[in-house]
Length: 376
View 1 (cartoon, rainbow, N blue to C red):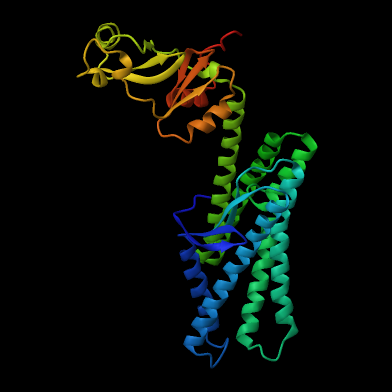
View 2: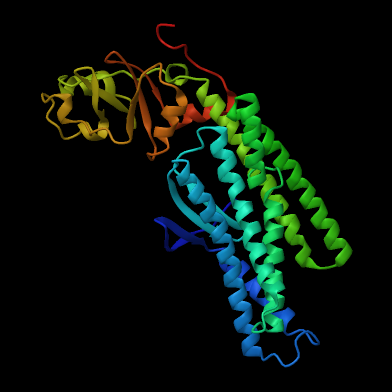
């Protein structure tokens, strides 16, 4: 949901734990709110300000520990389902457990999603149980904070089970639709649409609540709704992108290839036949059916005219190869790993086309396939 820069705070069970910069904002707000409640006239007479600060900070830390417990439950279930976890990041509106691969079957999605809210429910119940026990050693202030922590965790558990993606409840809904339809894409669309509706409802309710109460803090609900709507919309766009990529091959997206230069061609012939009038253009150099480099006017200048083109070329950097029949979702995945990538589409040792980032962007915008796949 648009996290800021994060920093590492440690590891738990081999999982890296990171904190987003926005966490400091909510930590300060929670501490201030708790301090205000503890020191409000008539609430806890005789409570010193230093003790109120200490209790407020401790409660805020327990709150974040509860969120971490929620995310660790997700991580533990990921591992139980043999899905590796890369990291957990805590941020302003909760946490995110990032897996290295997606759920393979609906059961993976269901179990990983439902365990988080159940953990929050258990944590909240534990706080309320301790408070309800009314142990003699508990001060009224501590009982008050335990009640708040319990109620907040139970509320978070219920809220997270709302069936709107990307909330845990939305992922539970996705797993059910996936199981029924057999299509993860359809399941994601359905849960993301519900997520958009939930987001809009939260925005409207938050605004109405603010107008009624006059408290700017009630806009927090509208902000959460807005972020939920944005996340659900981004998910829908991602599904559309994936479907477009899965429906195309490199041979259907590629642009015609530029003329290729034989590696043993003399530089003089390259200058005359290729580079004249093409100051900023680079041409692929072919040897044994492979692109071994690129030659341009800049790289050829200063090289003896009788030397071969291979001595005037630069090695290929940021260059990938694909076959005409390779699906574009796989090609695009490799392109994302490189800055300014160029994909050479090679068919049985012959360069038949190229794919630049602009070609991919054009296809993603229009959905139009420029060229038929060779041999089809």
